[in-house]
Image 1 (cartoon, rainbow, N blue to C red):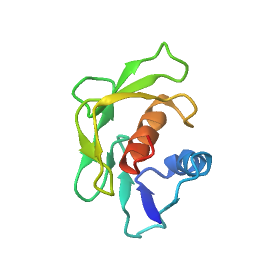
Image 2 (cartoon, rainbow, N blue to C red):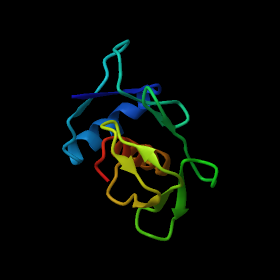
Image 3 (spheres, one colour):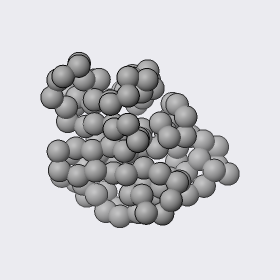
Length: 118
């Protein structure tokens, strides 16, 4: 079971929606509990060994590439590794169907990349 912490308590509802909608083997962290993934205050997602920055510019690891598609699209700018060690190659990722605001959908996509689900 993957434990996911959020620095902003307001992120817990969309995280719960993401976990349920994607049938993830994950759960939100209890306060002070050790985590496998952390969604920080800026919407970046980190594990113990790497971090995916999420943003609107091309310098972010995961950046918005299109808002014309329903829900938007994000681009993984460089290779990263899922928690199980599987390499994740740069590619476009649809954000449609993910819960929350654009920033939360970006963080949700980063969580799914870490879990090897997209």
